[in-house]
Length: 174
Image (cartoon, rainbow, N blue to C red; front, side):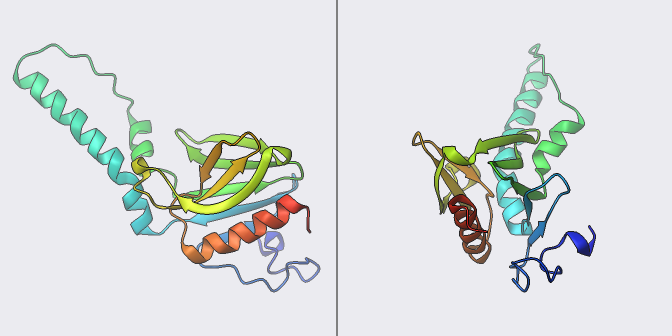
């Protein structure tokens, strides 16, 4: 990425001089908005992969037992996408558009979720579910009361920084 897209390097940007916490990167895509990328620590990535590894170990154990007992079992093996799923995305990112928040590459097979700004009631720092080992995450409370968990594995310093920026974006403060 070039320095011209980094708001901390652009003197005409109102956010000039803002020190980003380690593991966060801001960029301004040419399509508009602001993209925030999170680089997870190796510990967070390992914790995120643990439930998936247990699932795969269980499937392998079932396959070995089925083979050993000569039971006919059909397994549909996903191939290389299975390994990508196990590894998970190394970077999580969100795109703050003028009218919507897009959460990129946080859902199975990197599906993007787009939530209109008018649908978001607020942001808070919380914990992800049991399947994500209760790691720290950002939670968006939607107008209908549902909660959307994203940026799982974020550090406390990163979470405070991002939450402040998301609240400013939600309020429309530039």
